[in-house]
Length: 143
Ligand SMILES: [Zn+2]
Image (tube, rainbow, N blue to C red):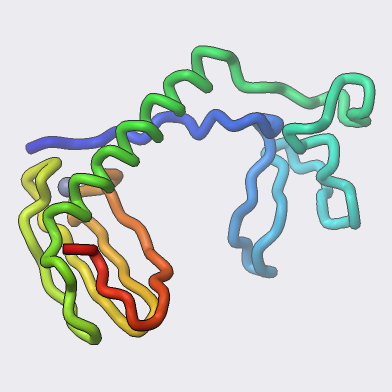
């Protein structure tokens, strides 16, 4: 069975930074526990922060190798998503859902279509999935 391993999400933010759902709601979090709840306090975590402007002496960036591995995963993810869209009925009738064999793996793509939107997701973890905004009155995917 084919699997898709999701590598470390190596962005240009500080590696301690994440934006997660917490018990209090969504917000920026620091893996080292630095309080980011104040306005602007996450500034030093941002991609645009530089050594000159950063006030956080704990900032640690991802390595170029980690970023390259993440980009390779993202590029492959986009290719899988494109193949998945091609496997769908064209167009998907409004207010319907269904499933088709995934062209990327042994799983199934579950899809649904509603007014102004559609969603697909493969049953295999990390294979592919997305939500799409679709203009009213348009067929999707295009035949
Ligand atoms: Zn799949």
